[in-house]
Amino acid sequence: MDTPFDTDRQMIIAEVRHFVDREVIPVARDLEQNDIYPLDLIEKLKKLGFFGATIPEAYGGLGVDFVTYVQMIEELSRGWMSLAGIVNTHVLVAYMLATYGTEEQRQRFLPLMAQGDKRGGICLSEANAGSDVQAISMTAVHDGNEYLLNGSKLWVTNGVHGSIFAVLARTDTDTQPPHRGMSVFIVEKGASGLSVSRTFEKLGYKGVETAELVFNQTLVPAANLLGGIEGQGFKHAMSGLEVGRINVAARAVGVAQAAFNDSIKYAQQRFTFGKPIAQHQAIQLKLADMATKIEAARLLMQKAAQKKDQGERCDLEAGMAKLFATEMCQEVTLEAMRIHGGFGYTKEFNVERYYRDAPFMLVGEGTSEIQRLVIARQLLEKYKM
Ligand SMILES: Cc1cc2nc3c(=O)[nH]c(=O)nc-3n(C[C@H](O)[C@H](O)[C@H](O)COP(=O)(O)OP(=O)(O)OC[C@H]3O[C@@H](n4cnc5c(N)ncnc54)[C@H](O)[C@@H]3O)c2cc1C
Image 1 (cartoon, rainbow, N blue to C red):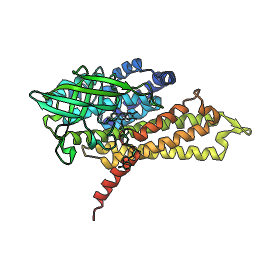
Image 2 (image 1 turned 180 degrees about the horizontal axis):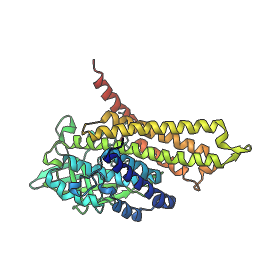
Image 3 (image 1 turned 90 degrees about the horizontal axis):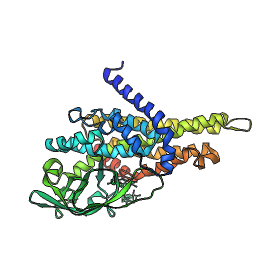
């Protein structure tokens, strides 16, 4: 039997689904093809409470659990994955603040973030440090009531339109292993010496900016050291990445679902050899495999979200969900293109967009290779002899 909580969840998901069908799908292709930042849709997402989705109600958010949130993200990605990227990155920063911030930091940042006017960005990767986060070279030197940050961060989603950045830096360059000497700082747009040096043209994931941020003698108040204690930053970042990985799994499920939905419709409308292609067994096999894989990925994603909701670390579940869902999405979007034949290769149908959006998810929040390493490490720990 459904609990009142389940009913609330169903209502939220239904509202998001309705919003995506009515407001997102009709405009997504045009915005995407012209690489336009979706300002109008962001205003609507603010009204729906998306930016405060997981922020506790005490700080002005909706306070939904991750099981609900991933379904919201799946729906949003069904419309346009880039929107989910803008929201997810922000939610990840909010999660780090809500979980590891001091009470003063939570009160200062979370209510602003819940409204969505100030959006978050996460700054971990650098030109020479992506998979190997411990290789970052950005430094933060304590100087009285402030820290002086120097270095640059690459690939920052929300890097141009975001205002609150969670930045991983080395506060102690001698400590071994290096992760013990790392800390996260909350850096606000407008900080001295902080600038956007470039943005990237991409294959897909359009409409949302991917930027390089330069920190040149950037002064950050000591009160912005996340949690107030040095040396905890790597742990904060990895815990945030778990949320990021479950979220990317949700995005992959959403994109794959969109590809499947378009394909099963098209297969019943397109005739070859005197009958709809859906009546050819080869196409039926594709549809069956696509739907089965999507459902399997969705279950992995939900299991990981449930574990995160229990307040436990969930590297294994998040890694499995991200790995399976993103690889699945790449396969399913290719199958969707095949089902659409020549039209699938044109910009008149959405399947080419799904196919271009899928590869980013194989990389962002850790590549498939890195997910496999994380999974294997957890398994060897679990089955240690
Ligand atoms: C569009 C986009 C948006 C992004 N947004 C953000 C963001 O907002 N914030 C942020 O901090 N980062 C962001 N990233 C960065 C992303 O997380 C990194 O690109 C990713 O972690 C991979 O790092 P890398 O690009 O340096 O690749 P590398 O680490 O150089 O990896 C190159 C290849 O080597 C493989 N590899 C590396 N190490 C190993 C190993 N030990 N064993 C086996 N194979 C290995 C990788 O799997 C990959 O195939 C974004 C990236 C993109 C493309």
